[in-house]
Length: 106
Length: 173
Image (cartoon, rainbow over all chains, first blue to last red; front, side, top):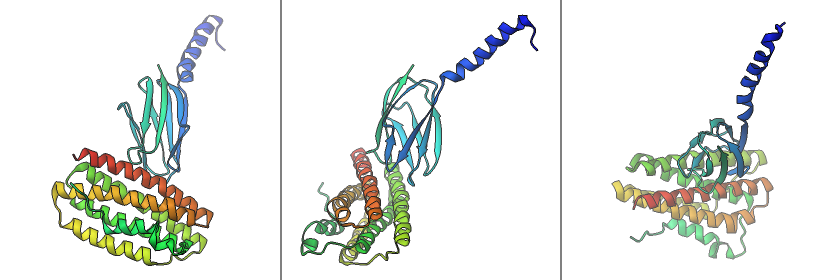
């Protein structure tokens, strides 16, 4: 049992610890048959993208502006955390016909 | 510089015209053989490039080609096994192999930057020719749905390779 006077502090701590992770979401982007899906995703800085490669080929998610470059081996999932805001077009370096967009809010 | 189209590419172009105009639509076992052969040819060219190329982007591209084409061909082998289809050798496959061997010998004589340029230029032209053959002949002629679907995935992969090769070629100038 918590003495009454500590309760507000306890709640504040609880909210404090929850507030940060609750804002950061995990978003899945799949590569299958040489297509990024969904092709356009809205996210925020701090969110994690789980890049799920369902193909038997290696792919990359390479930002045209250089903000990120993630390599996904065949049949593997690779997480990456978004660090910079912006509307970023990205593509696969190995198969440049694979293209998609991430809208990253600050 | 003029890049002479390799004879193998000329052979692939024939797929769309004279060779098959006489009413001979390729059968699934023949299509499987042609597609597999086309992959083997590119793997052989890429393995040569992995040892011979001097530019690091060209070398990396060649490694990508080995990896992707081996993955496609493994899928093709798994599929023909599943479908109990025996790939059937045919004149198109034979012409492709013979002329690719000549091209490989021709490239083997080149060195350094000259080799890099010739290899990448041939990759652009070769993928273009294979994509043309897939689009106009092999995919429309395939009757099995799974074979058709694998060829369609192959087309997307090879279109990607063509763009990648064009990008590498642009970087060599």
